[in-house]
Amino acid sequence: MGTTSIKSIHLNGKPIILIQIKVQSNVGEVNANIDVMDPKVILTLEKLTEQAIQTEVERSISRLQAMKSDIFDFGDIVHRQQPALWDKVKHDWSESTFTTLQYDVNVSVNIPLLGMRKNPLIQSVQ
Image 1 (cartoon, rainbow, N blue to C red):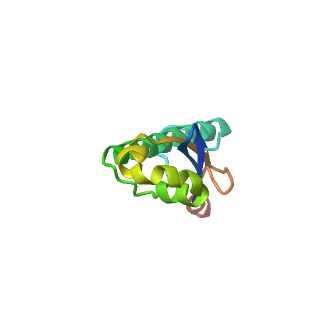
Image 2: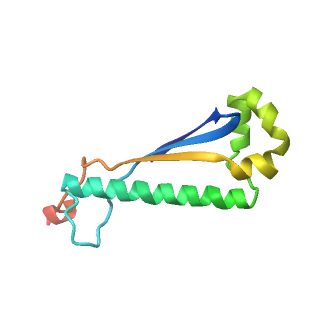
Image 3: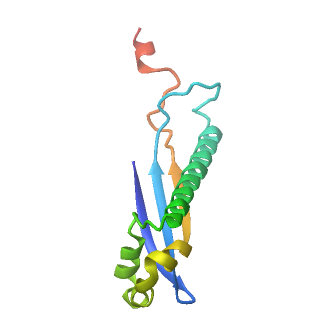
C-alpha cells in the first residue's frame, strides 16, 4: 500500500516536478539467510527498496522525456498548480519544456515489524 503526491514548483521561470512516494510494505517470504525480526535488517530492506523504486521512477521519466510522452500528466499538474507559469510554457511543452523538465523523486518505505512471526502460525499449531 502506498501514496504518491506530485507537486509543481518553479525556479527561474521553469517548472520543477516534486514526486513524493510513500510505501508501506511487508515481508511475505524470505529465501535468504537473514533475520527479518532484526530491526537493522528491516531498515536495510527499506533503504534498498527505496533506492530501487527511485531508480525505476527516474529511469521511466527519463525514457518518457526522450519519447516526448507526458503520460504522467506533469503538464496538467503545472497547469493546475501554477496557471501563470503554464501560460508561459504550454506552447512548447512537448517539444522543449517536458523533455528538459527537472524533477525530484523522494521515496519513503516503511516495513512495520507488527504481525511478523519468526515461526509461521501453522507450525505452532502442529
